[in-house]
Image (cartoon, rainbow, N blue to C red; front, side, top):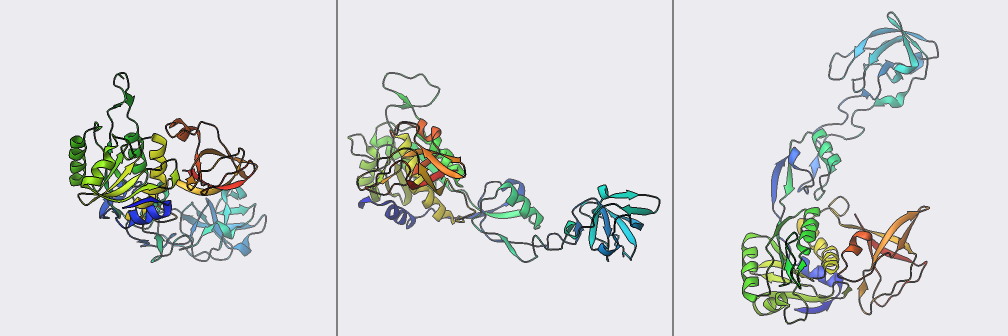
Length: 401
């Protein structure tokens, strides 16, 4: 077991013990927000043929001077395959998406014409750029969507355009979430003296869903080694990974740490970050387990910094197109910020765009129990260890998506 590791080391250790990745096929209508398992190669050209991007007239560019009269040879509409040969002095009426007649090289839009009996009078410019060329968007045989991409609505539409009705996607790993503590009760119940509403499991479940997993929330475990053991055993037998909330610090009732020390396998404990210093990672019954702190801000921050990159590595998500919780940006501080001795400091800030510059303010209390600060703010600082920042300094930050 390693104690007091850097964020980078913690991620490396966790990634040596990934969640097992499996795949499945799903219908396109069920692929929203799933992670693509293989590269998608287009089965077709797009467009499949030269076609018009406007309603108008397919013409020869050299025939079109203001006032020119061209003989109408017919109409091309989308979905019809009657191909016509356009000769000098002729025009073919054409609808958006219809194939271009042979011999035509430009489009005159309807608004720039006057249609008469068998002839059309040209009143505006002929435009070559209104022709969508075969394969200008996608070429048959080209790799278009990469493995590890999260299937957004545009990606799903693109997959259909490429000819796919089913997609091979990464199976969503089942991740157990276990909160523990005598003081915790479910929201909606009557609070008694000394009790608080359990919230971490709901937030963690949402984070898991956002990056491609299937959360499995367990009932709150009271401060009992026996109850915790039973919950961990059930989670290990039914899920692909386990996340606990609370019980990882130095207190007498920090039972997750105690049971992992005596019966589990701890890979690391404590990370040089603030907030969120006491997480642990290891295995329970050969199932990977992350023990997150009980303070709600700490649990969210640790998930963002450690759990998300571990799941991304496990599922092999694409660095650019895969699901992400944050984007790294540079911001200009409007408030001085105190760093943390020997630890990376992740203070909550609110980023806004002012005159093309990303400006960051601190607008709430920074306590690790203040989950409101994760809503009122929208980013975390990345202050290096032993580093304070002054008003006007430019620093790196993680901007929540």
